[in-house]
Length: 129
Image 1: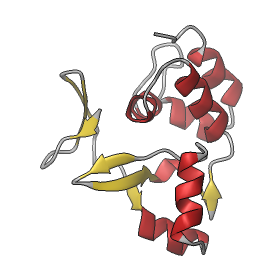
Image 2: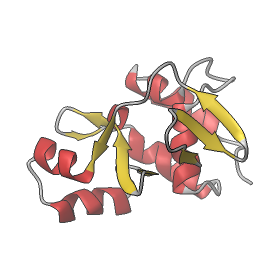
Image 3: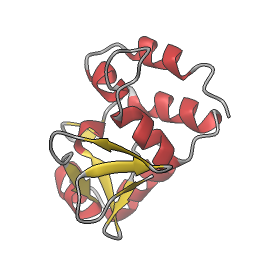
């Protein structure tokens, strides 16, 4: 999956998912400032799957919905781990979270933000490749 350069679309496997507007993304530098942290701490949060990134024009970006205040969204890590265990790459996991899911009737990230992580976790079951 990649964000197409020059457009505002998620792309994966030749399928595009247009968003009404470009999703808000944080750079590593943005998160360093927002979290009052070192770049090393931000990279550890990514490596330990508390946050997930996509590359946009060559730089790592974190979707703003993955952040709550000055910390990663608490329910995100378990969902990311479930997706990775199912065989998803980091990019595929981000795409899954940011795309409307038929079972949920919404984007999984929106369901997590509404506090219904159990519905999202149920939706991850059976996704293994």
